[in-house]
Image (tube, rainbow, N blue to C red; front, side, top):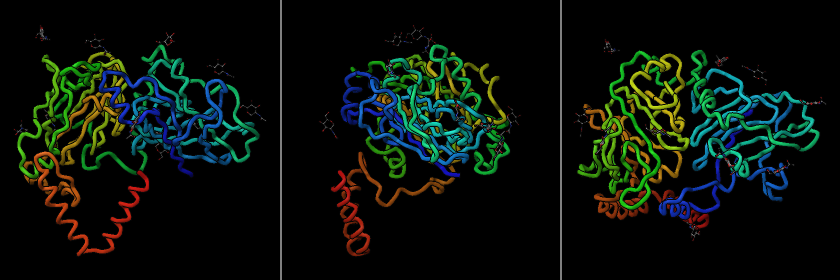
Length: 433
Ligand SMILES: *[C@@H]1O[C@H](CO)[C@@H](O)[C@H](O)[C@H]1NC(C)=O
Ligand SMILES: *[C@@H]1O[C@H](CO)[C@@H](O)[C@H](O)[C@H]1NC(C)=O
Ligand SMILES: *[C@@H]1O[C@H](CO)[C@@H](O)[C@H](O)[C@H]1NC(C)=O
Ligand SMILES: *[C@@H]1O[C@H](CO)[C@@H](O)[C@H](O)[C@H]1NC(C)=O
Ligand SMILES: *[C@@H]1O[C@H](CO)[C@@H](O)[C@H](O)[C@H]1NC(C)=O
Ligand SMILES: *[C@@H]1O[C@H](CO)[C@@H](O)[C@H](O)[C@H]1NC(C)=O
Ligand SMILES: *[C@@H]1O[C@H](CO)[C@@H](O)[C@H](O)[C@H]1NC(C)=O
Ligand SMILES: *[C@@H]1O[C@H](CO)[C@@H](O)[C@H](O)[C@H]1NC(C)=O
Ligand SMILES: *[C@@H]1O[C@H](CO)[C@@H](O)[C@H](O)[C@H]1NC(C)=O
Ligand SMILES: *[C@@H]1O[C@H](CO)[C@@H](O)[C@H](O)[C@H]1NC(C)=O
């Protein structure tokens, strides 16, 4: 079976400095300039909407075969609906875990998420077929202008794709029903292969939760004269000295371990406040989206069980609706505006791990924190040591100067080949920058 990677994402022609400047001045990113499929623009399905001469993606297939489409939303901030004209998408995997297999005519993929679909080439190839990635949970009639369109080409195809694109989900004004799709994704308990944490949390439904964190996001608000995004009223500020490097070198005051476990009734502020998480604990995190936009959240170093998702404000009673048996485990989950998503994670991976919104605009404006997960008995022995080329900065900047001098000398005397490789790498940087 062929595996076909499909990278879909919104695209802004302005560069990251210009986009950041917009956010800094309190503006919204606005509608992207396009949606790309594998880095290419839309096929000219409509001569009014799509200019002539754009390169577009063509995926070539043979009739009768089944292919695995691994689709990733690599965009900046837009949720996308993925569909292939005339073909079913059999969902089999989300971010490395097998799902119960179910056919969809279209599937929502949020920023940072990945899913695999088995697609059988069972059509008669009277023409090529459209592959579509369209903006979701925005004003879809306006954003239709920036739809990503590629081509599925059978080796026996009799002509180009024509006519209108396959229809987008018809629930634009009834987004309540849209949540049924993610809620239906469950673990395939009989598939072989990767299992979420075979050491124990596979039976996650019977493990006692050690800590609960409710993280609420609100629409951006003005803090210290600038628009900022927050979690529990805190807009994250990156520390001058990297967190774990500060620990290893006993630098004090680089961050605070006081991230609140629930939204507090206090003035919003900016801070380097992180979660004091319990090593080997079993954490419950409720992502409460009180913003007006669809968001997706990602946790580094872990995948988590998506046990609940609903509209309204989460309460203790919401636990009654949790899926305690076959919830899917994944690394990135959507949180609907005006709704919540609850996840469970077994904290067996020591380190300091980022927990953030994947929508780059909100992330840039401060909607993130870290979880510090340290084994109190072994002082970081099971953690990877910092790499030999670690960059020191902040309170440790003086170590960097010592090191760059020393390592330069050791490269020349120690390993001439390595020195040559580095030289070539440097040249490459100059050529391509
Ligand atoms: C980004 O674009 C601006 C113009 O909008 C330009 O002045 C700047 O040099 C660009 N920056 C980078 C890093 O390409
Ligand atoms: C192309 O798009 C425009 C704008 O949405 C629409 O009015 C027109 O009917 C479309 N043309 C075709 C041939 O579908
Ligand atoms: C999914 O759709 C395909 C046809 O495209 C069909 O062969 C298959 O049986 C369906 N699978 C399920 C689980 O519905
Ligand atoms: C689970 O995965 C296996 C393939 O590994 C598949 O045959 C089976 O149909 C799947 N079960 C469900 C309920 O989708
Ligand atoms: C091919 O399939 C399409 C739609 O499934 C149908 O309208 C058309 O008549 C078929 N053509 C042939 C030659 O079978
Ligand atoms: C989307 O935009 C159109 C055109 O501006 C407007 O008529 C429509 O009311 C908007 N829809 C929603 C749901 O805001
Ligand atoms: C979970 O907690 C309950 C009491 O709250 C206790 O009876 C039970 O043994 C605990 N289970 C585990 C697996 O620790
Ligand atoms: C939050 O604080 C304000 C004043 O600081 C107070 O009026 C309000 O009642 C408080 N709300 C809650 C839910 O405690
Ligand atoms: C972090 O939590 C541990 C218990 O898990 C506690 O011993 C320690 O004092 C806490 N640190 C801070 C700064 O609150
Ligand atoms: C935000 O929370 C308030 C108060 O709980 C609620 O009235 C409002 O509908 C919520 N808005 C969204 C978009 O979640």
